[in-house]
Length: 567
Image (cartoon, rainbow, N blue to C red; front, side, top):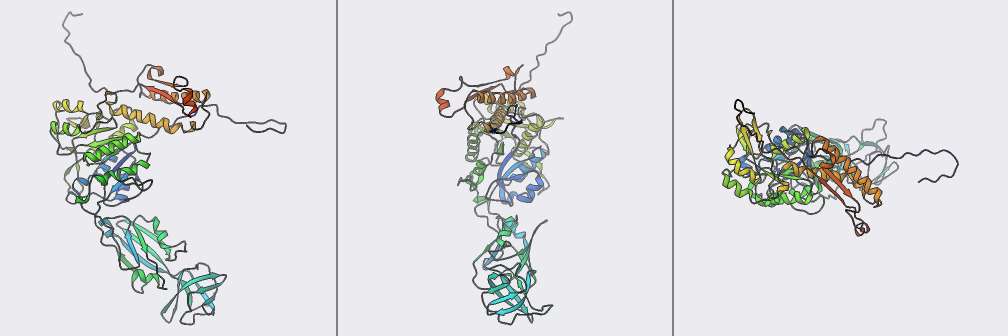
């Protein structure tokens, strides 16, 4: 409260409303897989459309080269085609992949930003840029009085041209209008003419990098580490290349290190990049390693990402990978896994045997694989359904709500199914938690199941589990203001009211069952939920119960025949 020392009228603003809760997103997906190019290290990359995925991660991979590991690009295309709008991508790279480079013998080597054959298409054009120049007015041993020192820095390589011969030197000091060189120039370089014939220039250069339709330009680059135009620093912004510079003591003109001869410009082609082989990939590449923040790979890189709500590893059906994916979702507590079944598992017995390897309410399993048009072969190709299903999840969330089961929904942009199952076969698979994708005459290809792979009947349905994840995460994110507040009845009342308002809105949208708010949910906080010991230990405990909507999985109409005269 403010101190009032002078008599007068004071006006204060205060908030009379309860803190509001923000709903978290439920439709942002995370995907892990092999791509043509793109970042191998660091955080997963946000993608908002398929065009941006192609620009950053490249195109489709061939079956011959990558086999079962080639499906991520297809899955991302399906994700966006079925209604997805945001996803994060983590690239997996075979251990025997290599970077494209310019020349390992040179003290200056350009590398493709990431490994793979894609880098062999990169061309780099280096052009001299001696725009920073000045007139030398007086020479005193290795000190030179110049007209202007603007643009000259300690460490710059400079040059003068006399009778078509170029002489190089290095700046070791700049003071007022005096430039001190590492050595005395071999020729007299002073020129006090009004229009000088001899000028001192800083040896800089421009870089143009091209890859397919992408072009990057970097002007006034320098090899001087003291310069804000230091080339290695400038290229940190490049999506295509990076540079390795070895220490050089001599006054070698760095342009010659790049182009190997005195020219105004030269072209450099990167070579030697390799995609690696499918034989070099293993489960651990997809599971990844946890080496701490910003140094995690594979699945582990999503530990730092609190944006995603769905996650999949399209086409990867190794049990070790999927068990790690499930454990990741359970540990994070705010995301749901979409699992693929091996394509070759087509009989009911084989599918059930595979499904029984897993038990979790944080995952759902879909089959069979869907067929899409293959841009490579121009024929139909079977791909894992997880990308399509993730897109349907996102579409359903955005059009109906997370409480709506993502089932009886059309799978768009596919031309068929790898295998068609009968109702009798689904009678066996559905209770086991295998969600089939089926084709119905006149109704298209639809997801025809909404179950998790949990043995716990409370968490049988995908939408129930995901609704709870949504509620829990929304409450967690929106009640950070409570931390360090005085733990007393007024705070309890505010927290209770805030959560009740949020759940009341959910009930009105149809997410919760009940004829009234009291039937749909309860929020209890206070003496019934906390002991004095809890309060003394800094704990605020709120107990919440909700009645989620469950899908009408079996719609039964009982019909009898009405006879004449019957009442």
